[in-house]
Length: 163
Image 1 (cartoon, rainbow, N blue to C red):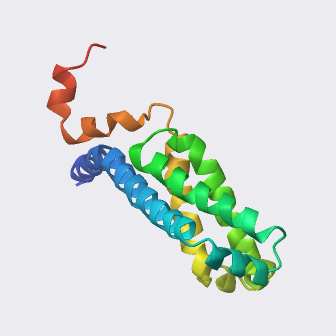
Image 2: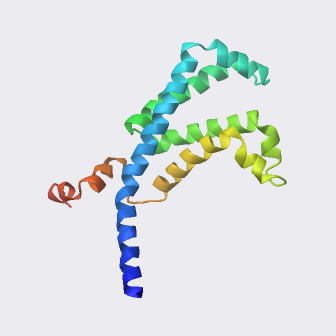
């Protein structure tokens, strides 16, 4: 019975390892596309984010709207095509963190007294998913964005490998 459980466990680990890169690729593509669309929408009509930032009391709302729109649009494009994805994830996470603190300040203040209020706020999911995807990439020293196809076609990877 223990041998059967060990075999099942090894099988699950093998499948999990094979699916890790394609899943991270899909997450990166999804979030890249979402950031691109959001940034492009803001760039097409800067008056709306400028008015919103002004209503929140953010200094230099027009300059901030341009900065946010460009970060989302061009950062999303870089994330989408896989160029500098680790590097571009930093300003995107900063942008999301500042947006969370600015728009949900009451939920952020109640993080210790009422954690459910913090985690049920709308921006929490948007902030936690990209961070978890990037965290997994950053903690895997052998991960390289261009190697996701190897998990899908392992025999081709072995045949074309020069290592």
